[in-house]
Image (cartoon, rainbow, N blue to C red):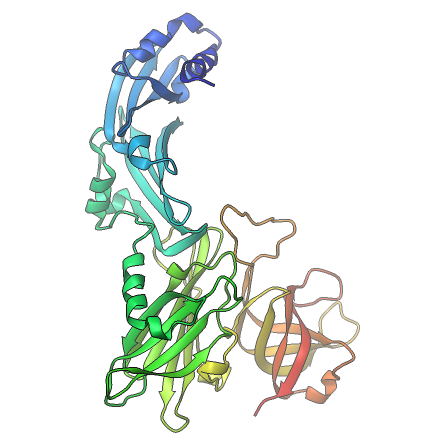
Length: 461
């Protein structure tokens, strides 16, 4: 549909009781456009005798947003902004800008970047009195369709103070909030520097997600390194430790190829490493729709074992664009999860995905009575709170509320059952390590929020 036909279609929607179409004409709208072709028109003023309308006009470099007020067919200018959004000439073929007025909220959105990295930016203004003022700003950055949660940005008027629509620019909003402009390629220079330095230690077919340098083992040479590598042909990441030698070169130490998965939701930009004083921490942000978890795996060098043991595991949970983590925080230590070598660790204590994902959980097998149960049932009393996580979503995927199991957090008791392979009576009141599948209890005969199907079980000391 041509722009002209699109405009005529919009005008055809203006017929409402007590208001004739002739009250607003294409000529009336055109006189606000500065002679440029109108891209879109929206707002409550299109459907009622009184209300505001936003007219969007584009040229190669900018998108001009023009706010007008409709008073019984007479249009008057409220405000004009030609510095908030870029035109297609600046955004390129992969980007785009748009604006629309819905109720008292004016939305200005744009996308910039390419398939390998792009950002979606949304700016919203609210009408107060006769003017519109900045309300909130959101940006989300993606790499190959998976969101970079480290780059997610949210700004409100509380951070910027009052900004009138007519004076607003994205740069001004970011500057007043102390933020930087979204850059879908921001980590590339850092990664290139690391690749150039450690290329001899990166196996063929692998790419560098993140890296860090520091003292890993407390010796005389302080520039050891941790490399976080991934391959699109592999299911798991490779975490490689390098120890600096007297000559300044590196010696390959232990590695882990089991802890982190590579799937359609994996984004290397969601990884981070910190190394300091014989400790190193692997950080990852894992999302499910609007929410995400920030996980911290911290390892400490054990001088007797000459290896790194899991020292603590922490998880912060973030809801939507809230910049502050929620109160539901996981903090586990060796006391809860026992001794685990870095190179053998293949699970996150307490955090598990539903079937078909495998969970490893330590705890004690007990029998417990429930009101509707004929006999006592086997229950694993976990050593730490268990979080059953919904599977991560790919780009533009949405959870199905009817069929997808929701994330359930903080469960300490899981009904446990096994096939004929194990007799759970042999493990009664004993500390065990169980490997199995978790699913949500939702049918008769299931008495806890989470159910654990045991595939392997062994006694723990």
